[in-house]
Length: 410
Image 1 (tube, rainbow, N blue to C red):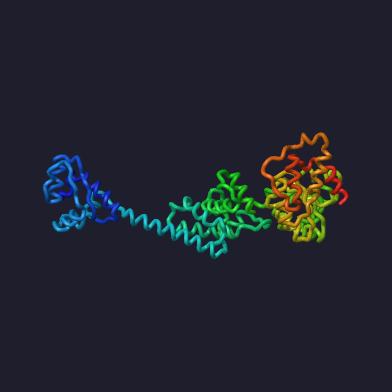
Image 2: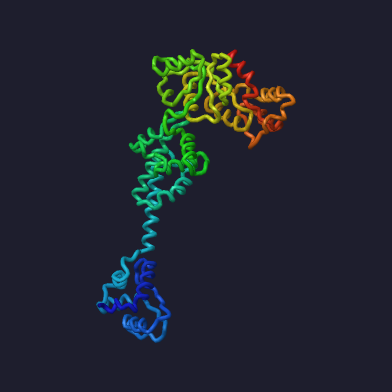
């Protein structure tokens, strides 16, 4: 057995192994051992070639390395320690390599962002910082590929109203219909970008993730969500067009899916007035009154299928008239529809709000209190001021007779 294997040198090898790894596997610096017992002092004295008179000793690693080489005891200090403590890690080198790999991963993502025309987007740097925790433990090549695929997917997110299915987007991105399944790496990376674009927190639940996908125009499928319509009589000889026309002629509402919209050639003739409401009760009341007006209900904040239909109607040359609630969320929705689709506000001006309050009479105190932050109405600067002053919300149901009258008279 070599003298280097003396059990009394065990503490020395432990201390030297730690120092060598911190030194980048270079034999330099001094280590100190204290509380030495007699066997340790004798073994250490024999190793360094000098007496150890007390219970502590300082060992110069460069000198020890030179002595081991000169006496032929070991090829080097590093070799002597590794043969007794296993492979040593160059920690500074490992950190440098890891940093270089992280930088390369980030640059690969940044290059793809530039290639896709996304490099100057305001969310990019925050996204690159955010995804470090997601890909940080992956091999650099795997992390780079994941981020490049994520950027490709982000660049293919549908534009407002265009909509698509998640499996369709997955196939177009990576040729794998399941690569955007809930919980997948690619899905996680893309959702973080969508959250930043929308100024939303990173989604934590399946419901939050689905809602964020839909906000970006991506649906889990093309048939589970619908838009409620009345009086739409699409042209064309397809079975879908015929089915919608039959329901229209029967005075029935029709729930259109994204798949339906993709299979309809033309939904309305050019110049057709289409009345858009927020509350399903308005459409239901119009149906009960036998109105033959064309009505679309957003059922609150427009989903992807709703925005797809509105975009199709504008493309067909329809004139949209929009009516929502006189509350701050209602004004926000109206702003979106007026700005995105050129809709004309329908009984949503300051005078209409004042008339609704007057019609409530003594019951105005029972109207809901306005809550939240005021939202300026893009079509009527005086409306927001009037609503703030009155402090009451007026929902569509409170004006139902007027709205149904409009729909019945055209």
